Length: 170
Ligand code: TQI
Ligand code: ZN
Ligand code: ZN
Image (cartoon, rainbow, N blue to C red; front, side):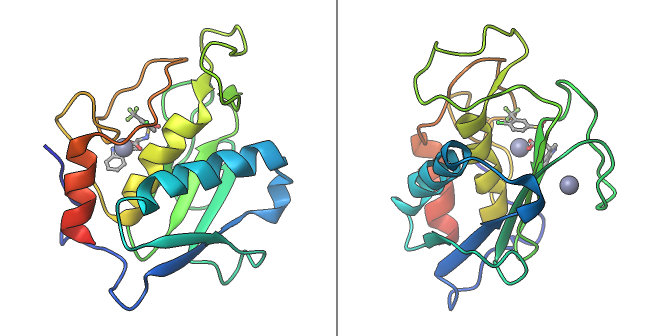
């Protein structure tokens, strides 16, 4: 079953049209940006929320970046595997990914990098966006918010449990 963060933080009801931006220091490819756009769409399909990329990193509601090791928020990354990414509940809106991971950016499962430590970026993005919106972890194994994913595995479709959780918040 789905869960929320303590105190049930969420984006307030007057804020339905949210913006996100990428840390300009990362210089991300259009492919990587498209993965995040797809991941946001998976949540907007089931909520009144919309997500639009903003060119202004400083004023965006949600800020996305790739970093290695300690990167200024006290939650350091740890090299290959271990922690892959983290996101902070509303209204903080930070989504950070470990740049030491091998990220699979391809849309098609199986075309992967051949590395057995590679992680599917969209799968992790959909999960972290769940946290950005206020969802905690789920006990349902098929749920996006279940706290385990195998290396190379692609799990991007919201489960009924994710939908019920997000619709309870929004
Ligand atoms: N990062 C953890 C996560 O996002 C960070 C974390 C641990 C956390 N406990 C938490 C976040 C409690 C919110 C609340 O879950 S992770 C997965 C999954 C991670 C894990 O790097 O371990 C995914 C990132 F679910 F597969 F295990 C993405 Cl998809
Ligand atoms: Zn961080
Ligand atoms: Zn999680």
